[in-house]
Image 1 (tube, one colour):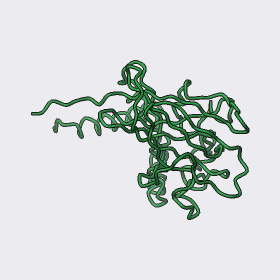
Image 2 (cartoon, rainbow, N blue to C red):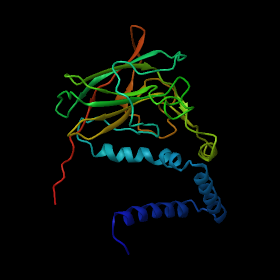
Image 3 (cartoon, rainbow, N blue to C red):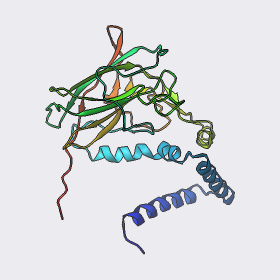
Image 4 (cartoon, one colour):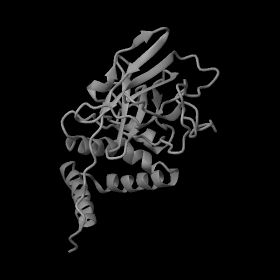
Length: 257
């Protein structure tokens, strides 16, 4: 028998499935129906969606369990991150017909000792007023509702956008059919994505949500929804404000061989 990381992980996954088959007394007909469903998933191109739906939050939990005290929790990246986005200065591009409230994102990036981190790169991205993503859906330009900014000498960031909305994951294919069969919905709560980078620190990818928003307590992706990142809806000068500080963890140094 092989004895390596790949063998350990694959064997554990297979044994987990075997346990479920035995525990739930899965019939041969159900087994064959499951194979047919997986073939349909592969043909539809929704395999990444299926895996993220049920397993992404578990990977995030593994990351958070290893965090040092006080480090901001990670959350799912989702499938809509784009690396090559423009540097922005105070304002993300939005659709002209977006009638959602103006949104101000601001806060401070700090290290584990509470020191501000100037020069950190902060990626932000969120949905349009109809739940689409720039650079992903309907041939929308990739610089809509997304960009990257750099923290100032006090570790601060600030940028304006528009309040995002809840939206459904793709739900007309086999993944949506599976959730319907399970009696579940396909909605995600409104949220803003963040990815924070700084030399010498571990990358932080997370999401921030709106207190009282639909599906915050019932995310179809079984998301983490860290309580400290569910923010009350505060208004200043006609804008909704998300004032969110993040604490990032120092990179783990690996000893050379």
